[in-house]
Image 1 (cartoon, rainbow, N blue to C red):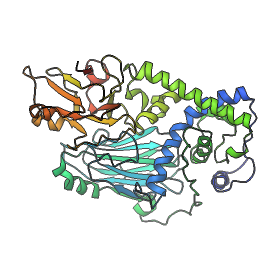
Image 2 (cartoon, rainbow, N blue to C red; image 1 turned 135 degrees about the horizontal axis):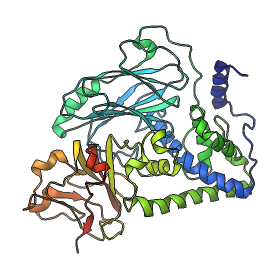
Image 3 (cartoon, helix red, strand yellow; image 1 turned 120 degrees about the vertical axis):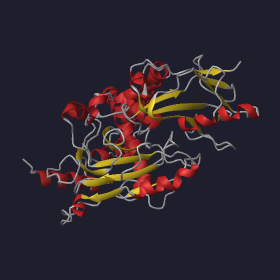
Image 4 (cartoon, rainbow, N blue to C red; image 1 turned 180 degrees about the vertical axis):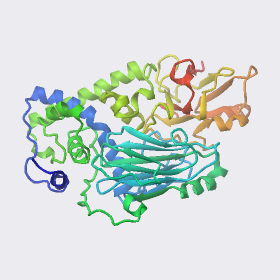
Length: 466
């Protein structure tokens, strides 16, 4: 029986050393294809998360670098089409980012007290992209406090002045902060709030000696096809070394081992035979096809909402297709209690939204605006690159704080114009500029009221103007 420190050391060493075959490819081609499909759906979110981790916390010379591990990076600005670090960005809540390495010790996050009228949150995400906890307006209030994030192996004592301890099932985790920005004039205030976000290792917080150092990690450089080729399994093996195996996944991981997937093991793509490689590629294609069908039949028709795709492991119930869909369409989405996301990928006739083919209206009947305890926001994205749409107005969204400037209908309803061509001056206040091509829009409702979740409130359709 190996003791825990030795086990952890071996796990860490397996990340650094890449000699020897740690996991053998024993599956037949047809078996490998079936396993590769499962492993692709399972591993895609992990590898997509790794891309963001690498650009924000490892690649110091990169344009999207934010801060090293266990330090905070703040962005107090309005997102624009030039921001490309991750797809479907949200422009209402400037982000702060902390990539957590919890191997050595827990990390204490301190939040400042803020005014009651402003929303802020810290979304805590494990390396599977599951949301394991929240801090902030909904969960801990606006009075601030000290909160400790611990990895799966930590067994220490909670300090007396720490308000809450939350556990991550992985030693690498992500803290994604959102601070509500009221308008351009509000940036200084947001910067002041962000200045109050503190991040400290536990030893520094309690002013004690730090635990022994942990091995340095050799982060593999991202490659172009890492999310949609057998390369994915190389990055998956690397990342799984930082996660405690879950009992509910024991059989699944045993099956994955038959194609060489094992935590911390090298996955040598170059050593695959042509037959093995084809089996893996076919499995990945099968996974993509399953997602495409699911998106068309369930997501585009609003039978499945973002509330189904984002959340904790308990909430997702190990539904890897759902987890994949969330990572593909808008990685790091909020859990259903925190925010509801509703998508406009197709119009009222079921056709993909396209600014080159149509202009559209979006009509909210009187007293039927999105029901939010915090605020709501409708943001438009380019369908080709999933980023904000460049336009001379620099308008990327319409939100509830803009209501005083919007023009209401005669009956008190609200009609928005979603189109590429600039409308007449009298209609410009309600215009959301679209690209001359495919687009989609996401309606975000922060702290949604019960009628959103129970279906009493209905999302109005995107209607093409004939």
